[in-house]
Amino acid sequence: MFTVYHFLWFAISAGLIAGSLVFLVRRRPPLEAVLTACCAVCVASELVKDFSVIRLVPSADGSLLLPYMEMQHLPLHLCSIQILLIFYARFARPGRRRTAVLAFMYPTCLIGAALALAMPSIFTTSIQASQAFTHPLAYQFFLYHSMLVVLGAYIPLCGQVELRPRHYLSTLGLLGGLAVLSLYLNSMFAAATYQDGELVSVEYATNFFFTYKPPLPIPLSTPGQWYLYLAVICLLAAALVGLCYLPVFRRARRPAARR
Image 1 (tube, rainbow, N blue to C red):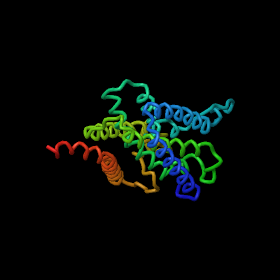
Image 2 (tube, rainbow, N blue to C red; image 1 turned 90 degrees about the horizontal axis):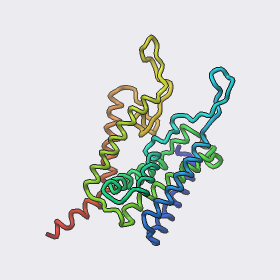
Image 3 (cartoon, one colour; image 1 turned 120 degrees about the vertical axis):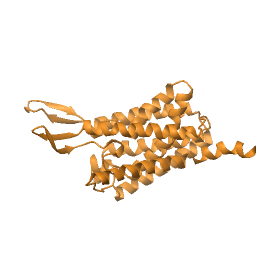
Image 4 (cartoon, helix red, strand yellow; image 1 turned 60 degrees about the horizontal axis):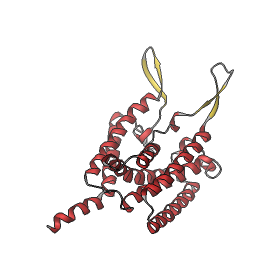
């Protein structure tokens, strides 16, 4: 993270995002067509990721080698969950539920993927920085998240999704529910050590939604510090999503102002 390789990938991603958005704004393709392309990218991305991270690990008795994917690679991060939402938005019938899903995807794809590009966790959990242009996981990570940023930005730009102020609250509600769910998932997938039925340590834990520890190397040594961290990321999420919805709030106030 924050190496020359990271900055090179960040510049490449920024160029791809800018070029894609210029193309989309000029051509104005239907959102359905863009979602179709995103579905194809999602499938290719997930296949590349899966076959890049699966390892052959010896069985307990050493007689077999078994394929194994480490738990941090499960598609339970916010950006990975977008795969299911993209397919739902593409194939669901138009209606309030589909609009609510697109309203959720708008800020979470745009902001979440942009933050992932700015703070790529793969360089601390999966590959070395020196593998930035030699390992397929790096290409998968940066290209997939670039696609999410483009999709998130195009949802309001396409003019085909009627975003309302109420979607700000529904987005925060869904995001908060997923964050609470991540607390259970992170504990469920943790490798805990017990002695005489008492928990003594945790050797490994996933960090879905970054609810267990910050993406930056900031140590949390007391429960109070962890509660403070949770409060900070909740306030940050509310502020960033609110920033995305500022144009929606302003547009909703115009008819009232004219009256």
